[in-house]
Image (cartoon, rainbow, N blue to C red; front, side, top):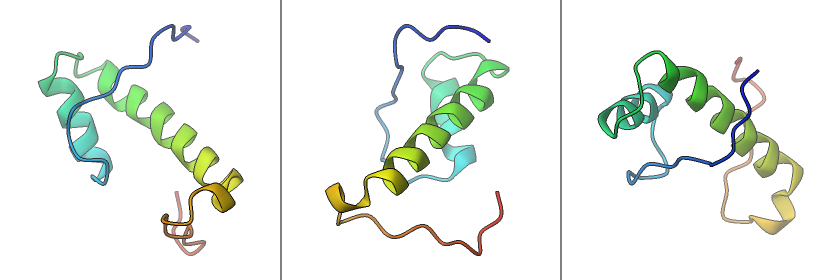
Length: 69
């Protein structure tokens, strides 16, 4: 697994679909091969933070357990 030394973010809105995030990274210079995997990593990290620290983020919607990943 590659070591990520710098977190890359895009300048788009936060609430986007997975495919919209991937396309935004591609539009901003990431390769089409790298963008989906990088988006998966960021989504996983975001889900972990949101579910592990819900008390710190009351404005977030609770995760929907009926959604299958």
